[in-house]
Image 1 (cartoon, rainbow over the protein chains, first blue to last red):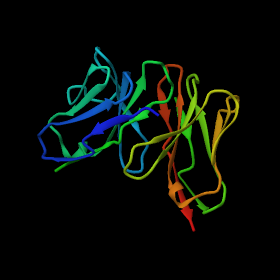
Image 2 (image 1 turned 135 degrees about the horizontal axis):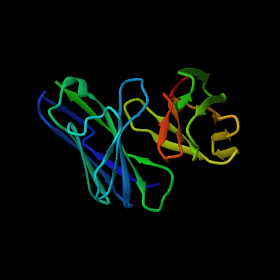
Image 3 (image 1 turned 180 degrees about the vertical axis):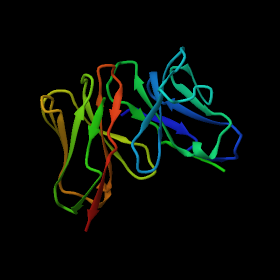
Length: 116
Length: 109
């Protein structure tokens, strides 16, 4: 199957700093990428949908100025958590849908963010 | 509103069979997905159903009834490594995935 690589897998940062998470599609072109966060023992919560070359569409309640998403190429999307707070600590997961319209979304490995 | 229901937790014995049910109420339907998620890891795709009936893939099978808004994931010959959460997700009329909370499956020897 298609491979999506997410980096870093774990990151610890201080309150007030920014953290960038990368999501790359390694063997296909991803016109659409999705960013999720997941709290312990809960399901995935969609944060935003990003389409290559255009602004991301954020879900209700997600602060677009805090969670900056850039999808500058067909193989890379980035999520930057700005001015991180401890409550931003979570598991962040990206997924990508290929340009052939295949229905499965392929997931990155996830990033465990801890803000101290 | 949109809703996906699945049991919170199930327990089964190694070598046995287990069925995980999922019922959904969504605005439109463009397919139902099952994913497996081990603790601390991202979900991995298991199956996709868009038409009624049973899809078999090795030890795993997935069934869909669109008229009943119902699906199940059937796991046969359970192995300890099958201990994980199983997520049901439905793609709605906007082609957006609506996720269930997941079913934690515990396999006992």
